[in-house]
Length: 101
Figure 1 (tube, rainbow, N blue to C red):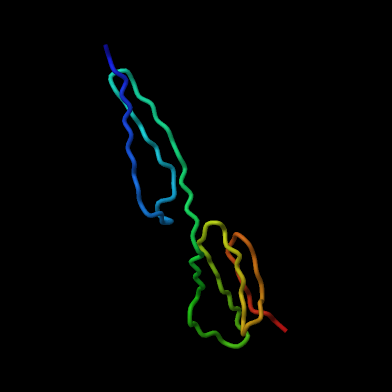
Figure 2: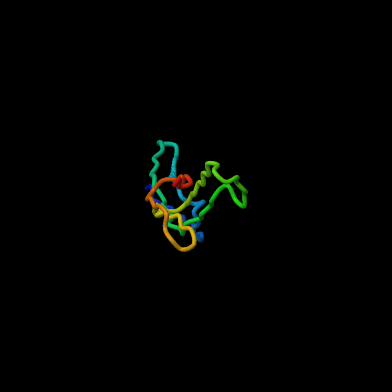
């Protein structure tokens, strides 16, 4: 008489943004194989960059600043100068051009 056997395996780790993705588990024996999938989403705080950094421009020249935020869920971006918000956006890069008089 054959006995049914169940195998269980646990994988534990501290979640990080780098763990996000599609995980697949496959089990097989002489009679075939089966698999199951799970998607892991890791939420994390925004990592913000602005470029260019510490660059000088001539008076009257065009300035373009690109702000990027890597975050899950998607971050809201806002560009401020001397405490005054110039522009904001949700879910995409913000490109800011110098205001002209």
